[in-house]
Length: 495
Image 1 (cartoon, rainbow, N blue to C red):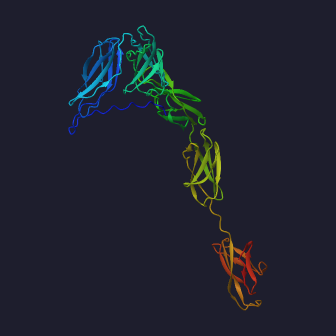
Image 2 (cartoon, rainbow, N blue to C red):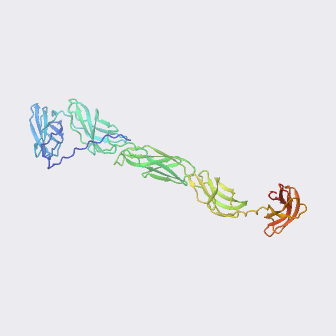
């Protein structure tokens, strides 16, 4: 935050006549002053209160209080707040009284301090010049005033702003630096110098200098960003506070980057190496407002870091079934010099595998797929710069499911009567065979207690590899019974 002097106080509002209120004579003028010269005095004052009327004029009256000078008076319009009284006597002391008038009459007067014209009043300084070096100060210089035979003891330098504001500084020599913070940055000022001599007399102000505009170092540009692209960095920033100066240009530089000077708030570097980091700075260069030459001031720097890069590319080279419910996908990865890559293999719109993948050829086997399914397959690569475009597509079909395993199911069947070796009520063993070879004969072993074989018989399957049979029988209560065909065993049934 820059320190600025406070703005000048607002001018008092012009009083307008109000027909509902009476007009009374004006109040007294304020701050009456008198500046002596050689046989002359310049009288100045502040406006009087109009008291619901319109000021029609001022009268300046003077009287000689010592030295034998002549008295007199002069009238000036109501809009005028100073006048020069001439043909006065050097060495005489005068007091000036100013009164204001409106339609209701003349108001009370206000006196100046006593003042004495003199031929020994210092002359006006000449060749007043001002420069703004760009640090918030203004350097003012002038040629030494004529002391009229007396020593010049000092000067008062007055800065007058384009907005009517003013500031003063004192100097014991023919130059002075108006300190930073005294004047408003970016506002135009003219400067006058007034001399004082060893008699305590003050001369008239000099002619004003040419206008100068104080300015200071610009702030750092704001919101400075470096957005990476493929072999590029796009730089952007916001306009800083220029410290009251005019922009000459922004200077952009960085390691491995050519320095650029431009007046826009963005620029793009191309042809860079992906993966190479760059530290970048930008600052404003300014000069005095309205000038095409003169001192240039380097502003504060903003900095940003950026590394060019781009998402990777992936090329599909093929996909094929490579085992039970698995497909091997072959592809090639180009990291584009932009760091590590994560690959995503997509089967029918769903990611079925992801993981790190290096540069060059890759062969990834994806398992756990569905049997006998045709898959549409593609691969994508991703890095810190984003996900790249999808590869080309490939299609592959998984293997058919294996045939179901043969099975035997045992249950208690119909009653078996009249069997000579059946010592209790017996039942046939009801056997259901499934998923065996069609139209084939198999030897079934009846086992009791399971798995001890006690009888065998031949079972023939139909065209679907199935058979149903009830040949063996069994009747020992609490015993366990099962059947088997080769290495295929049934369930165990407790009788």
